[in-house]
Length: 265
Image (cartoon, rainbow, N blue to C red; front, side, top):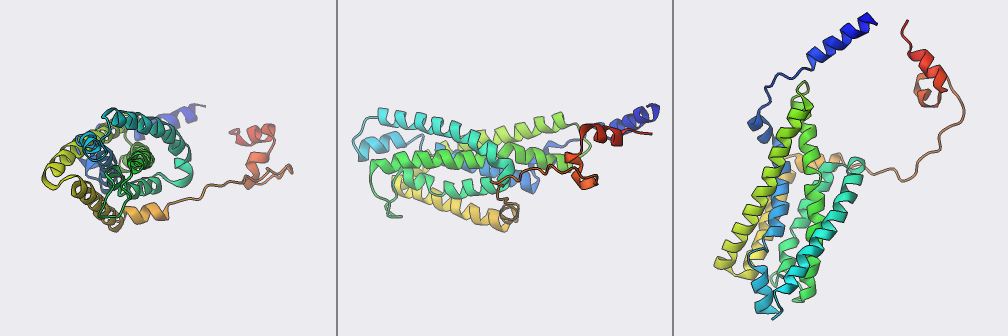
């Protein structure tokens, strides 16, 4: 028992945090940086409509501003439900893959919020509602995995540092991405509409997101997301009832046998 306590002390000393976790080192890590940009783009694609969508609906469809007020709660409710679903399947499919699919979906968000004539979208107000639904889906896919991806990567960079300290820094980086997305979306959305008009502004932003998706893919993160994609097991095998005394079958050994085998001499 004394030996075990000494070994535990040695392990604790090895894993003791040195306090040398660098915020800039984590922020500029390629995987964390691109993952954070995914969050920025997902938020920006949705908030792009904030400054101008109300005026567009009033000008083009002669509908009251209250209609836009209905769209945002629908988005929020759908996003809340989908966030739970994404969180449940993330470990089974892969967070990077879900995030990449979410960013690809963001290409279609702005051209649907203002139905793009350039892309031959039907000029029906129902397309705008559909755009909000697509935004909820893509944002859940792109944003929810953001924090776990950053935390996992940070733990790989600093394997011997305090987990809580690492997570605190990752949380700061993640929330900065959310804030930056809101700033970029609202500022760029309002500015581009003033210079280019509704149709070009919303469509060109989609082209910019598509260009980023290509960069993300070529950077290696996109290919990594595809390679690490896992198909979840939908059929679970029935556990064997036959007791076998081999290392591979430890899970089906009787509890008393496992306890006996794990006792130290």
